[in-house]
Image (cartoon, rainbow, N blue to C red):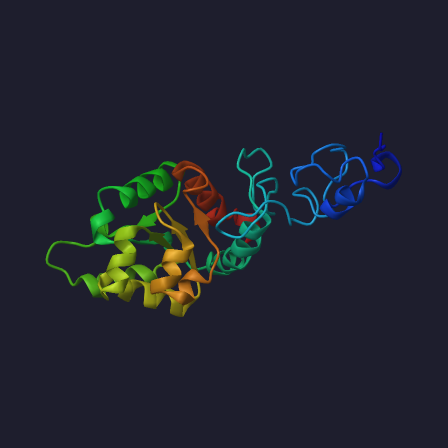
Length: 235
């Protein structure tokens, strides 16, 4: 009977298992000797399991995260949010700015956009939100311009309705253009995918962001709250 060579040679690869006289006939799902790990694990350089946002498993914290926080990030999320955080810190010296400008489709104003808005405010984030900040009879586009100018960072809530608005060049598309020009935005994908977003906005879709398909809206809101919180001594 053929003897397994794993104890002496190891089966770190599928080809190694295939070359073994005992294991070569087994299926490609070979799983013995699991003490051998991949050279890039989620706890080393971040090349672990991938998600739609292009990251590894959530096991890290950025420098701005509270040590007692229960929220963890992928390496890609940290890499994506770090330049946004640096800009937030620079803009924190400007008085009377809202923390975030929430860009969303009109159809989402009483559903997903309101849910995100409420979660952010519950966690101490000041939000520019058209439902409460655009007065009756005022110019929507003018108020949007003012909201963008007076916010530290822009959030883009990407939903099926938002994608449809951008495709049809609606108000959401105009907000998006202004946000892209500032290069201070975080896309948040909800009930759709980054692939769908790239079909209508390759520039925005090329950016990594946060995804409610992978974690709850609450977790996303907590990450955003951490992102915009700047202590006075850090300024």
